[in-house]
Every structure is written in C-alpha cells, then in structure tokens.
Length: 137
Image 1 (tube, rainbow, N blue to C red):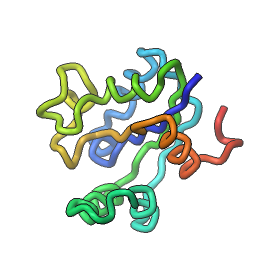
Image 2 (cartoon, rainbow, N blue to C red):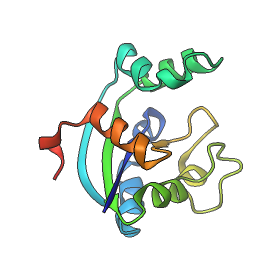
Image 3 (tube, rainbow, N blue to C red):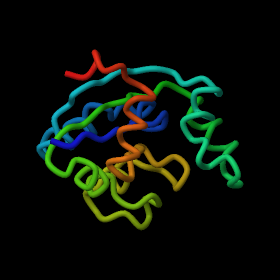
C-alpha cells in the first residue's frame, strides 16, 4: 500500500467542502490513514514549500496557505500518489477535467483547493513534515 499527502487548502476549507473532497478520496479507494485540521504559520508554510522559494509566486503561496485553516490527510491505497493526482486534476482549474476536485471546487491557479504529493519519495517527506509515525493508523 502506498501513502500520499493531501492538503485541503484554505479556500476549500472556507467554502465548507472538506467533506465533499474527503468523499472523493474514499469513494475512489483511498483510505484515510491520518487527518488533522491546523492553521499553518508563515514559518511552516515557508519550510513546506521551500522548493519554490526562488520562484516569483512563493510569497503569495505562503500568504495564501496561512490565510486560514487547512486539513492535512495521509491517504493510503494502491498507487495512492497517482490516484490522488488524477482526482485533483490540473493545477489550473480551467484546464482540469470535469469531475476533478479542482474543476469542481477551485477558483484559480492560486486558490486551487488541494495539494497532493507529486511522487512517492516526496510523499514520505511531506507526510513526515505533518505527522509523527504514531499518528499514522
């Protein structure tokens, strides 16, 4: 079983669609191994997205990710990384396929409802950023 990290971002939490998004995961054979709601600090968001720190959108990304609470999940299942990325849809919701999370719930390329690990290697690092081993069930 593969694990991946998903973050339901502040825009989707504010719209009160967390349950609808979680249902998409569970309805597609992704089991929730861990879940928590938290409010990222600027330091947390900066460290998590450090890979983007030289990009022009970095400061806006940190500001957005700290603008409200997020829901962080560890999803588990066969090919969990690929399955989650398929369910999320393209980063730009205007390009996302109908029926994907971003097509249905995202407002823009910046406020795009969800984050998902892009590889199984990054998933391990991202999961460890938010969860202790004892929190994974």
